[in-house]
Image 1 (cartoon, rainbow, N blue to C red):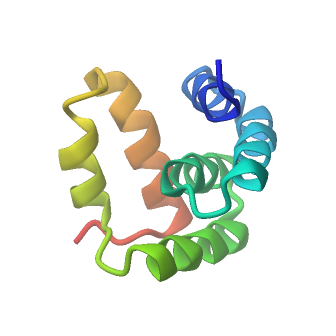
Image 2: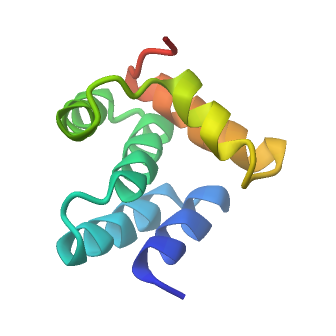
Length: 100
C-alpha cells in the first residue's frame, strides 16, 4: 500500500492524527498530490484544526483554484461508498472548504 493509501485508510478509520502523518509522507514524495492534500485537510477538519485546515485549503486552491466540496463529491462518488465519501466531505466542510 502506498503512503497515500495508509493516509486514506487512517482517515476512514477515524485515526485522524495518523492520517495527517501519512498524508505528510505522501506529500514529501509528491508535493502537489491533491488527493493527499484533501485527506490531510479532511483530517484537520475532523480534529477541529480549522486554522491548519484553512492553510491546506489554500494550498489545494493554489493547485486547483475551482475545486469545491461538491466537485470533490461528484468525482469521488464513483470510487467510494457513501459512508467513506461522507468522511472526506464532512472533514473538508469542518475545515472550512466551500461547498460551491
